[in-house]
Image (cartoon, rainbow, N blue to C red):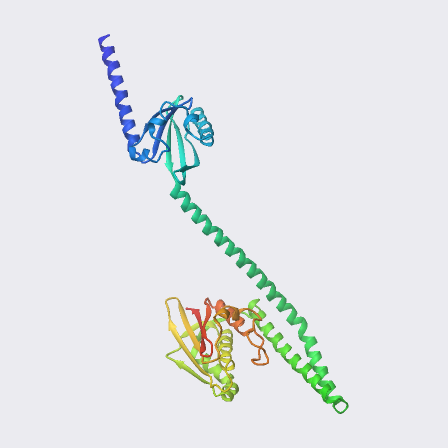
Length: 382
């Protein structure tokens, strides 16, 4: 019997020690911790006074009271539901809730862990910072999704426009040729029977037909690149030879304008499609010659700079310049900044350039000042 009392005393001391260890452990945790029974009564609070300051009231206000007496109804409902589930399943239950503390709104997570079939430990953690970070992240995701949707709309409309241009250009080519041919035929056969106005009208028809034919030709060329009708043949290209070939092709306009085309430094040897790269340089150099104030002598400077993954090429001129608000617009299909009577063209050239550069793994952009000149810069992947 004496041994039984000793054994019982040792058991009680062990239990007391375990409870002290448990309480010390909970007190060391950074979160607020409560012990509740199955009747939703607060039995104990674990935690330092520093942690307790985050409570809506001191710990003494809770101990011995039913949750309905000290907590808002929506929190009580959540506690009852999760406490019952924790006791019945003997598994941890959790929920989140908002709570005004002072003048600010905080968010908390409550985790209810069963001790036995009668009591639970409720661990309450302030997750306001996490919620703020999550909201910020979600806002950024929403913004990215919005931009993605806008990009998809633009890509879809641009593709539809390209398909339309491709189809229409084929369909219009023959009627335009017929219109021009009949206008010329009328002028030759009935020249002596037509007055001055009639001759002018026929000239207008021929001029319009020629412009339309040029537009259709450019459209077909653009479509062939966009739709892959012209196979991309990648090979080693000496850019100096390309520029020399372009200068030779533009001899008439260079001589007529007195333009000077200068290569600064050394142009690299790249990997690309020769035909497309020739078109790219021809479009940019011919634009630099064309878009000049009357009487101004064009000066075009070409340079290349090596970067880690790309070659960066610049083509600078002393032309009329481009307003900053149009730096992006000029690469859009059919987007013209000037009347074709002043500066002839189809308005496709720079769109063409953009597509060629993208096909070579690069980007193209412009920096410009009105009446001073422009610098077109593009990159070509190594």
